[in-house]
Amino acid sequence: MLDVMSQASSQAWAFYRDVAKTRTVWTVRDAGGYPAPKTQSGRRAQPFWSTRSRVERIIKSVPAYQGFVPEDISWEVFCSAWVPGLTRDGLLVGVNWSGKRAAGYDMEPAELQRNVEAVVAEPQ
Image (cartoon, rainbow, N blue to C red; front, side):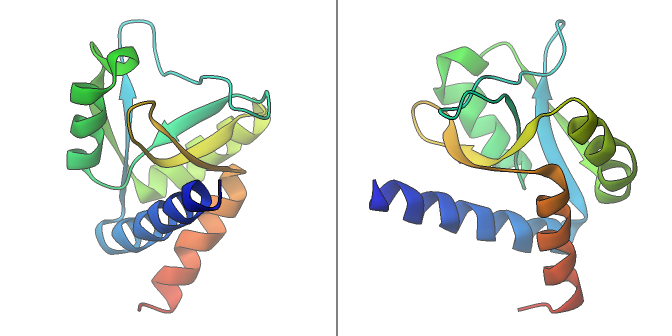
């Protein structure tokens, strides 16, 4: 379990750094909209990735995501529209989910926004 947390934490930091640099987040959608599967905690989380290549890897390798297409969202739109909407809907944000089951770290939308903005303010 510790190894999984280390991987998830590493993916989260990669997300913060990538998004701070590109000011873009990525998600997936299909004709039915955006996925928000239940997490182990029982809450729903919508996945977001920090690069198009990460999204494409999940679409290609995880059967549940085949048929979805990548969608980019500017950081400004994510903060002004998505964070309030996800919060209102009680959704968590899945951060750079990876692996055979597309899993990883989940957090509150406002926490994600704060973490990325902290990296923007103090680039590594």
